[in-house]
Length: 249
Image 1 (cartoon, rainbow, N blue to C red):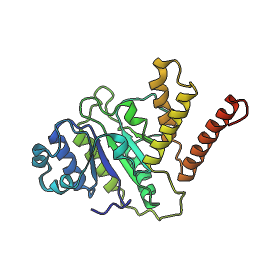
Image 2: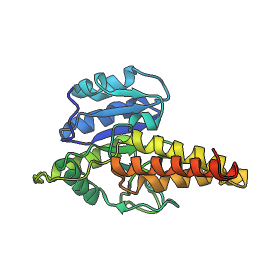
Image 3: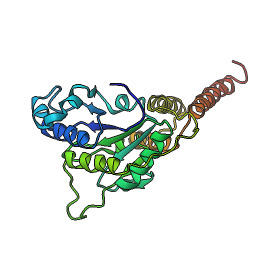
């Protein structure tokens, strides 16, 4: 399968039931989407129950990418949308499915590589997953019963993609940083900030690091921006070393 940015990929994060993976594949293919990635499926992969439920969409399962973790699954993506029914204490644009797919069509028309994240059946995406997304997609469902089956959620998003048949003209855009670039920048920030004693007290360190990742993911960084941040961090560390040595390296 040729990897082109003409459509988004759908990433199922820690799916629990093979039937729902198969149902999601079937829903995607109903509306012309065929790029699926799986992150750490609970019952292993391949899964015979997924094949049975996929019906004529088994090709999607044969060609689905399998990943151990979410950063690996979105490493080559420039824009990531996280689907969630629950409110989050993370500052990100929140879109309806219609608005999200309008934005996704615009971005893919510009050559961006887009991913949509779908969480496991029992509890959905974790905050650590959502922190790696640039946008949140929330379905306006009944607030007294907001649980959506995984395959249903995939179906809804795939339908919205197909419904918006208008073509968006391609325009020149900045060279957007890929997921792997942002992930490495986050690692660099954590390394230098750890060395400077920033993550204090220790009990708050995990939450502070998650907020850092959340901030980086929503900044729409270009590859040049990432290189600039790396250079700034290296220079600050070098300067700190000079100062601590009394002015001499």
